[in-house]
Image (cartoon, rainbow, N blue to C red):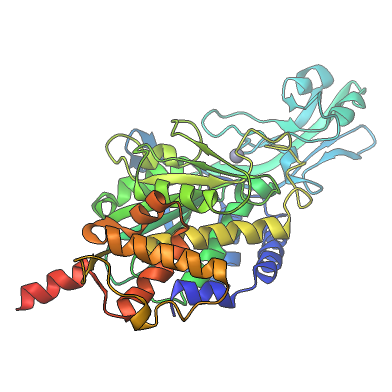
Length: 446
Ligand code: ZN
């Protein structure tokens, strides 16, 4: 099956609802950059896609970094004199400073306050805070909870372990016709946060689940990794595979109803950059495009100077630009099934451009071939479509000189890639066009 067929047979709404269902299952899991929460997340995904689970020992050197100790947490609370949990990890896992060292003792309110994080501007939201590379303990709570702490002493307990163990990541490789790869990467290391991390995880999973079904020109590699340290670890362990990566996308914050944003790769004008921008331009919806900057998600590592991979980042509202970002309000209400469905559709459209972006030779390059006598006008419905189809065929015929790809032609003509691709298919069928690679291989065999 081709990707064009796949798309026409899928229901975007149904896919959105399914992805939202998976996201709802993943929401309560307390994830971090290492530990059982990350493994539990991969186990959920493994019911849908055949992910391989990798375990890298703590202490492993990965370029300038070291794989950290593994963190696992069972329980955490702040109890008052009556023994009531006034802050309770079981109610929301954001209450614990992620990667906290264990603690179990009575502390004065004054000392406790040095370990508390709140959001005064949003008194009902719990902030999400981490301390991966500096050993400390802490709690995150709403400003209202903080205001109610008025006893002299509290009991604090974080029943966690921070010990030598492993960093875990998930990988799925789908071989295609060529060993050239498309990399799809997402971070899966945040606890109960929906748009930032889980939306990318479920859209990447559904993209993989669907690409399994098609005849692929490219090979695809999906990575479900802890942010930053995960991509550094993968790149450090797979340097021989990097050369095969032709195109790549980091997926993050793709579940909110905001408009789409694409952040270009460091290369700026790579095929993935052009494909993504083309898809957004022709979507009929508002969108934003940003140039590369070395701040953001794992594209920072893929685009570091020694690799400089053609990896961009697709988001709806980008990180840090929505008020709920890194707070308990990034929840199941912020993310919408329809938004996830649309994000999957954009990914499929971008992949469709990459899969179908071929370069052809016009086999009748002396003046225009006569399209009418070949019935090339007849297979067309409405008048406007007919005009567009004719235009698309004339553009493809004119620019198919072995040098211009279909994406080049779409950009230059202002027509959508889908229209250009459909015209090229019709012209190939009527033997007016031949893929340059086929021409080269038949010349070589002669
Ligand atoms: Zn984040």
